[in-house]
Image 1 (cartoon, rainbow, N blue to C red):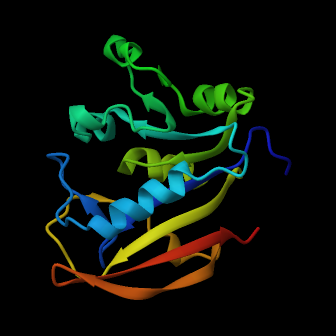
Image 2: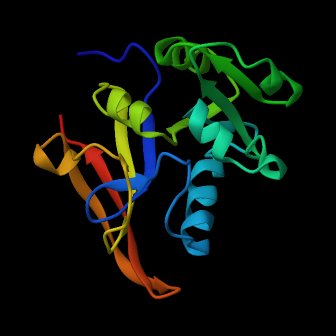
Length: 185
């Protein structure tokens, strides 16, 4: 099957139950090293004249503190059922009602280098099945937290193979590691 659009990656931090947060838009752990990892992965480009794009759902956009909106040095795409007029006050920020529209737009935008899906749960569950989804950047947070929003259990099948098994880190009593999975088909 050929790629209709530019390939993209998913980046997420998950606990032992694949939890990513709760319905109050809160992540139950605070890891500075993970936030720096997220920033480095989603901002580093192969070509210094290009910019990466991050695609997120409306709840993920809403969870970003105002002072960090839009995520700097990245083209921000928000998916929502209705247009978000307020996002247009920001440079490099746009909203779409459909993931395919967003992906097509970014595929045709010459200055975009890499594309990352950054959440939330509905978007992860939808996009992980795309042929264009080539990599998963997963931070495994070694514990079970009170989450009611989850990442899809991608380990149940062989769609993604472990490419890089990171070493363990510890911060604030929390053990975690960074891994990379690559699409196997």
